[in-house]
Length: 446
Image (cartoon, rainbow, N blue to C red; front, side, top):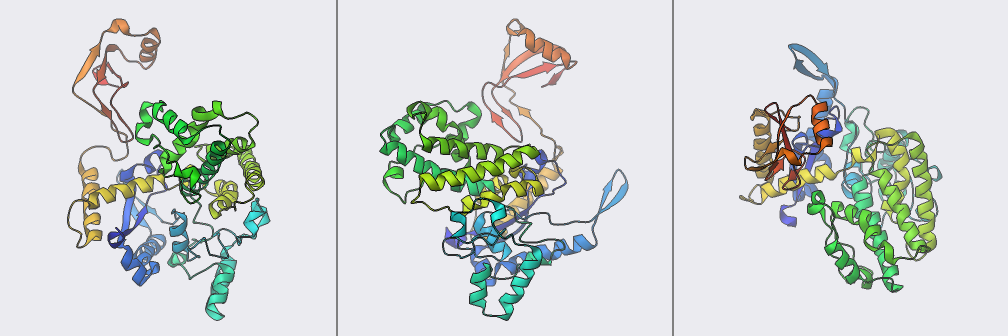
């Protein structure tokens, strides 16, 4: 509820490999406070202890002992990841995108400009130097006039951290921009057109969603059925989580592609968006692909305005024009999305459901620290992915073993004694109940 809504600040160690950095136990809680307290005293006061710690670790560093040798590491803040509202609040920018004159923390774009300009080079980019000058103008002249003119509410506490800039070190998040913004918005427009043209109905789509095999590993993210109001009510949005929305977007061509004419320009626009999302969610991106992404985004936005002239380019759609340069600065966009931090937040929410709510911030933080203490002292490797298997399993006769499997096991230097089908397999990244086989060789389980 709003009464118990919390503001949480997480941090991760950027030196870790992404496959370790994405583990929930490697996402650490830095601060937790009631949203009511943050609103009363300001977000800068909430950030101050964290900022002071960063300043100390940046100046003095921290000493880590490795194999009996002490190593001094200086600490810096590389980036702050958040959804649009939180990102603008942390950076001191305008938080209401519906009414703000300047709607972007990366450039000086206005609501009118983003309707016709679809390349980053078309906009005046914010710089650390210009941002400091704008903050000075905010304190010297008319606050209301300059605040609207520059799209700034206040100075951010984060600026006190050495080499950190709120205009360069708060990247855009594809989870909130694409999978909770642009994709559901455009999918709603597409389905409205297809239903109006009588190519299909929402009932047809729901029936196919229910009968479609999305795969065993995707069961938890299987899309929910859609409400008829999605196409009947202009204000009704597609209600799906980011992971469900991404899965539905990917499989939509397989679900209804046979019902859509090949020359449908609205469908072509949607497939263009899928190509952009595919690149945005890629783990590796080449230099040529970055240039290709820039072209795709410009083409998509231009066609969107042509096919949906009554619709405006929303701010999240504008943020896409900054993706190519963001990739050059931070690497693949999936490395800087907030999906795993949202998963960590859900863990804290579950911890808060049982217990008293007199001081919910203290309760959540204490239980999180207890869990961290367990992970550090349970005797298992903190970073390595440890797999566990049920003790109950069915042994499969070796006569059913394929030649390819035997050759593969032999190539690993193992002797194949038996093949078993356990009831379940669990690791840090997945939990399987069927179609999961464990091979036993040399007395070890694989």
